[in-house]
Length: 202
Image (tube, rainbow, N blue to C red; front, top):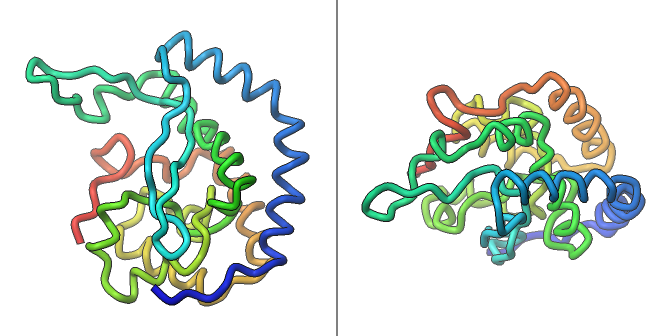
């Protein structure tokens, strides 16, 4: 897909926040890693292939929030049954997302942008929805501060495309400040009747 280049100012802004931020929170990352190791076992980090800028795949990094519990047939149990109390706590404050700062350092993600979803969703997007891949995926984004998992997929994608069309450094700064407020209030963490969000089926 033909996408505009990533603005240099956006990359500089990401690095200016992420590098010192990681140094400051290293003790917190270490403590969280220890807790995940104790309660969830290995691996501590959940890694999964996701589509990035222009749909290019990369491995997203998160702290594990679920166990690998399976049924008698060896199939993973539903998310709601595998999500632990520690996992729920990490998700409620978005602490499970902190390892994504290393994705930002590597240039695979930005602090702000459309959330990286699943690879199989790419073929389910309409041409308009696919334009969300015209930006680096973000740890937070315009859709996240306007409902997160509590809004429909269609609304999320509309907000993602709006962000792509209206990006500015000031918009990123605004979204970051709103994100802090939303996290503290624990808004939009999950969709009704789902542990996180239902699958997007196109």
